[in-house]
Image (cartoon, rainbow, N blue to C red; front, top):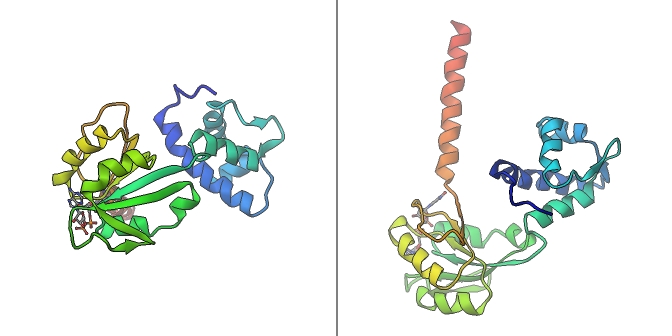
Length: 217
Ligand code: NAI
């Protein structure tokens, strides 16, 4: 399957398809038409067909989609058929919340190590994993087949940490620090800013208010 030219917008929609198909599969549904999937997910059937056509279609005309097959194919496209070992760097509030979220493991993301620079944190256990000194990080990443580093430290230390991660050949960084990392293109970076989402929500509230006041004018 050649997915080199798949747009980021399509890739960004795949996890949502994956979630819905997982729920359908768990409720014992074997087939679904693009129309029914469209109603369920509140996206147009043509959008669904266009998205899936990027990967060869997945469906037979008139028969709808085989839910389990589609679920497994999307999992393969997203690389979820393989396990990904990860380390969490920064064992504060956010690092702990992520470490304690068991569903990542169900998706194949396995927390192997947790690191913090604060000696008071070191030795504490989060879900049976002892927090280690960042001094051990490079060696640990090399020796434990770690793909992903989760960066939950303040932005001050994040750039330096990214340099260290480049040195130990990390494949991907899930970056929660509020700073853009300067790493080679060979490393995949996914920036997460929960506050961006909140700001979008705020925009929605403000605009609803504006529209409502226009409606009543
Ligand atoms: P926190 O203060 O509870 O934890 C930060 C931890 O990182 C501390 O244990 C500290 O010792 C450790 N640390 C600091 N520098 C380090 C370094 N260079 N190497 C290893 N460990 C280091 O903070 P919290 O609430 O967990 O947030 C962490 C960071 O994530 C904050 O900077 C915050 O701005 C950011 N954040 C980002 C969010 C997002 O959506 N992107 C959401 C919430 C927080």
